[in-house]
Amino acid sequence: MATLVSTAPLDLSLPEGGDESASIHRGTSAIVVPMTHPLAERLRREEARFFDEAPMLFDTPNADELFTFLVIAHNGAAHHVVRLSAPSLNGRPDLLPFFLTDLLAADPGLSLQDVRSYYAALDIEVEQFISVETQFRLGDHLEPIRAADLAYLALFRIVTDRGGPGVVAHLNSMTISSFKRVGMDWHPFAGSVDLRTPTVKEDGSVAYDAEYQPVCVPVYSNAELLSGMSGLTPAIYWL
Image (cartoon, rainbow, N blue to C red; front, side, top):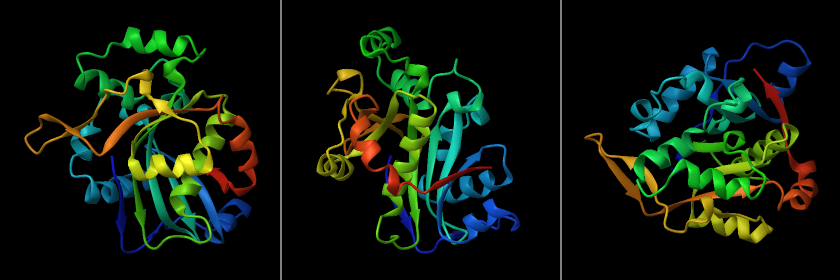
């Protein structure tokens, strides 16, 4: 799915008080927002402004356990928002990330057994992946590092700190080119170059977005690069 832009940051209206709150209100930080937190409803409304299909697409059983928001905030306002599917972060390591169940439902040629077999050869359990489902920018670019880049740095810090195998996402050519520039290793999801990114039409039927490709960015082949960029990662706070 796309990265879209709004004209103004979103004031998070988080209560002030304490060292953690002070850090969020002054400077740049990454904030993990569970779907049960009051802020999540505001983020869902913002998301729906950019992705008309989001309320219907993500209205699934166990949604509160499947999804999490990651917010890049500057001086207490959200500049970039990412919807993650990370059931392993929410105490449900038995659930598959939405990215995978969505692909399986949309592509009859893809089987869960094939996916499991492919990643088992890499010593990866697919339930441990964290997937990027939507992301959108609010306001101008942050300097000197873009908010979208800070979001990926924070996401990979979360993945590595928790011993996760990597990130899966639907990426466009611009993001793939950006990954190539910094030397980030990635591969077509499950090694299949024919997989397509599903989306939902207004009538509820499935379509495909030719601008995007399902990919995997594994930790094992990017460990040195991620370690070298760790000093650029914003502080991460969990609500």
